[in-house]
Image (tube, rainbow, N blue to C red; front, side, top):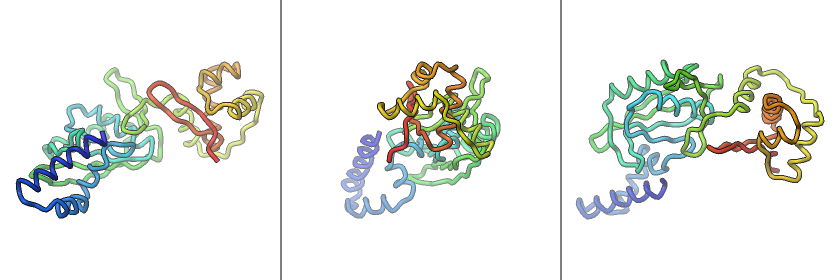
Length: 241
């Protein structure tokens, strides 16, 4: 993705130089001084998502859920995946964003908007801060409400350990964890191995899936464990250092 963005800006640069006689240095400097172009040049990542248009408010709700449940982020609506500006219809896109947040997200996430007019086109910037009342759920077509998290440039379904972690964080009470045989086995295992999965912990401890989820969630909330989620699995490991 980043290479595609860089390629697009190079092509635009050469066009301006040879078509309009603009000096490459002057054009590049103007480009990088412009907030929107500078943002686009980053490419999609954990806190930045491009949307060519909004055809389905539920899809936008997934991105909003993921940003609110992770570290916050920005949606640029009217920007193609390669970084080129497609533009939007102001009123329609505003309506779709409003629907995504007020109808297809619960609780409603905080957000702010800003319009950018470039190349005779309009780009809508939607900024979503990290939420304070996780989890933020998005409505699926089958009627379920699902929580998402942001990983690189993807929106991934939150697993049941994260759902329990957020429940613990919302309770906001002092926690004490008793190191039973299961926790002791877990810490011993992680001294010899880089990480563990939920299924591996279940096998190691002999506990039910739900009990293992609560143990992992409590250890994450206390800073004893970190996690790394992907489409295939989630790994739990002690903090580095």
